[in-house]
Amino acid sequence: MSSASTATVTSSTVPPRVVEEKTVQEELSLPILLADRVIKSAQEAESLRQDCSDLAKQVDRLSQMLRAEVRLAVSTPSLYDRPLRRIASDITRNLDRALTLVRKCKKHSGVLRQVFSITTTADFRKVSNLLESSIGDMKWLLSIFESDGGAHLSLPPIASNDPILAWVWSSISAVQMGQVKDRVDAANQLASLASDNDRNKKMIVEEGGILPLLKMLKEGASVEAQTAAATALSNIASDGEKVRVIVDSLGISMIVGVLGDSQTRVQISVANLVARMADLDYYAQEEFVRLNVTRPLVSLLSSHLDMEIVSNNPVKTSIPSLIEMNKKLAYKGGYNSDSSSHGGSHNNKREMETPELQLKLKVSCAEALWKLSRGSVSNSRKITETKGLLCLAKIVERESGELQFNCLMTIMEITAVAESNADLRRAAFKTNLPAAKAVLDQLLRVIQEENDPQLQIPAITSIGCLARTFPARETRIMGPLVSHLSSRNVKVATEAAVALGKFACPENFNCSEHSKAIIEFDGVPPLMKLLRSGDQPQRQGLVLLCYLALNAGNSKALEQARALNALEGTARSVLAHHPELKDLFSRAMNHLALYQAGAPLNRQSLAS
Image 1 (cartoon, rainbow, N blue to C red):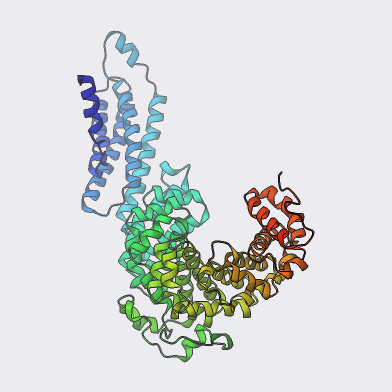
Image 2 (cartoon, one colour):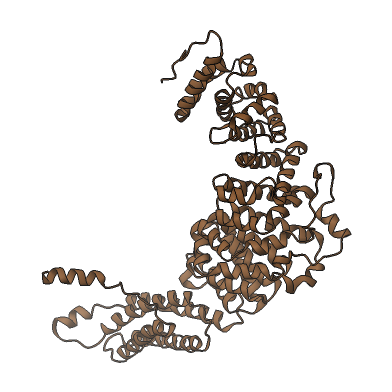
């Protein structure tokens, strides 16, 4: 191997150098050194000596401030140094210009003297203004660091064109270094800035605001402090990139720890933060499950519920809401036996919380479970391995409003994951399991008794996702689903068609029996009507009709409804937007033609 090749191989195996950030002392050493040089050069000036002397006085004042900052940095381990580094860099540039200027006033000979002597009072005025701005920046900086940490509304010259930057610096500094009250005010200020626009959020992240807020949340100095920190983090975490910064700052473990052992108001804010992060970033979802955040969430959600009793006839009973129940029932200790380690130190304080506040906590925990389970096998499995399914079923049974909706959405997301994961489906949703039976009972009750499409749709979707778990003889499912094919709400009717399609599709082992059951429950007439209800309903209705044709093509109901004519009349318009359905439509039409007198095979081509 040649020496050049060897050099190439050797250099490629050398890991890249990691450039470590300078310490504050190192950052300030250069401007201090430059200041000393400016003062010395000013003393040696031969021309414009008064201007040089005035400039040296400004530099000396700046030098004293820089040295004071060094002393402060040494004595303050938790110093917030982002503005200091920016200002130090700016000062370095200005001192460099000052040094170049005063050196022109030194004695030179020959041609150099002519070159260096072209210096005017106007040049000194420009540099003097720059140095005055640097002095103003240092005054602002020292006022922040030498105060008790309260946020400052004054504006340093460096941020004159961007006042928000000064407010962000001041607020982060107060969060990191201030007294408890100042930290709360500063965190609320950051939360307000973050809620204004994305630019502010990005600025807070870039200026190092995440870690101080996480530490404030973890330390638990007061309920107000933790709530303010969690709210600020929630407002900042508006997309996956910003959520990932929280994750990379080891924020997940802090968040889970606080959720498990804090007062109710804090837990509400933290549960909202968990929901926000899980909704925006898959990696955050998986980190939460790795640290078992589902355990405290399910524990908090199941407080005040008797998890050992499952109603055998939940459909007929109207159970009081959580607020009424909390007014009537004594506090039982609040947590499942398998999760009593979470939240125990605050049980006594939680007894004193209002029912309304406890309801808010449950709403937030249910939303967090909903977002965590979306598309996540691991989180869905964690929920089903605890008493999570039973807890969700009982809340759907007993509650209404946002809490009931969030629990239904959680069930829907878990069943959606189970639809494509046979192991989870078999482990959690066998129809003879108590928790699975409780969930199914409540889904059916919602479908049959609730009139709100917002509740009906997730319940219908959930049952559709579980279509492959039901035996051929399971007929109590079909009636309620078929009845919603004729719903006045087109979205509900469409979702019913989608769910029934999962019962009748070839991937379902019992598709033939299910298809016959759909027809027996008089599902064909409302299905034919759905074909005239717009693009999405028409497409889903046609897919279901094709499955019925393939599995029960000899049905009199299909013949009487002129299903073959309906397929032929609508196929072209649907295939124009969904060509992937061409094979299904062709097979269904040919199958129907086999059983209808006078209908020749391939009577109409579907070719475009």
